Length: 151
Picture 1 (cartoon, rainbow, N blue to C red):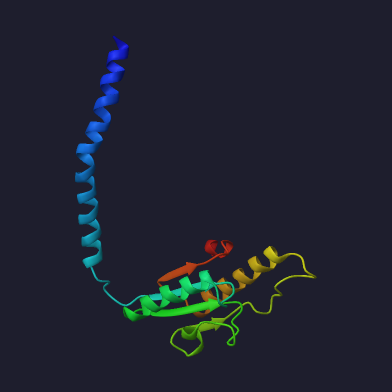
Picture 2: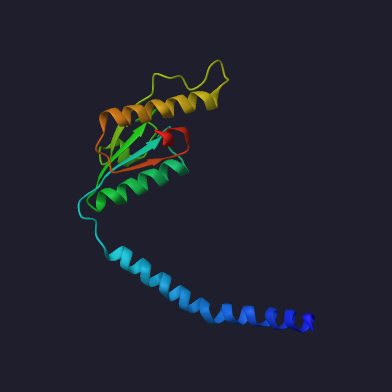
């Protein structure tokens, strides 16, 4: 008899999941649509903390996200520890996006070693600068270096 119960349950569970799945998907879509329709009450002050603002995939993602936020009326600042104007995206070079360099006094490595430790210290220096100079920021996006999140 227990085998029959197991077979019955094994057959009914997927059937119930198939019946309730479309309902769950509709509910989820309805919640997302309502969340998207609700505009913010005021423009946000967003800050992106990125270790090296050169040319690459992560940098393109940060620049695109910052550009979209700025196009929607929010104030955006990108804080980085290295920004070479000869090797960067156009939006950061021409002044479309505000870029602040903080933590550049910390070296990138010590005699070819300690890259991770130096990147962590540079990120922390950028976060400390951010806390001191931009106390009114609403959103902070920390990219690639996790220790500044604690601040």
